[in-house]
Image (cartoon, rainbow, N blue to C red; front, top):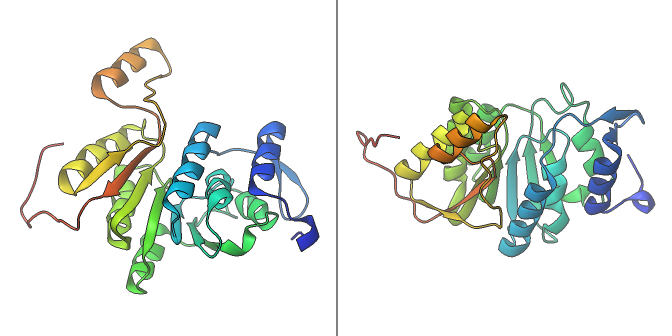
Length: 234
């Protein structure tokens, strides 16, 4: 781990990683980046943190640490970021954690290396209250639903839940459910809809179904929950 004199800003570390295509792990070995959010999504995430001034942010899925550094770039002094990622060292060689450790915001960050289905209920049971939850973990419908369920319990009215990789069919389908079964409003973070697919037919299909690729952000309007037998088609 770098000493205090070698600490760099999160923006500098992000720029270096993007320009080289590599991140140096904790043992000094440069490794190729294999998972990251793009610059537009990083800018939107940094922007919403700067605007909302959250006291606590939770991100589900850290990978190579791009979203982590984007949050830390504008996270207010005295605020905290918790990153839940059971695969940080197993699958990602600890690259995200290594980048944060080299940053000047390392003390504001805590890595929780356990599955979301264990970490999130534990945080809720401890009385944790988050202002922003960024969901970028497992992308199957059930995992996204689990993450959003606990995120809804962890934030107060006015808090924000954000979803990455919304072009995935599973996440798009879940968001259709989410907006009909909880009381949230989508907010503008400066990301234009993006329906581009792997070929023209996929692009047209995405346009027709509204399945856009950009990150989507939702603000909690109330604590309303549906009755026990409530259901709306999604």
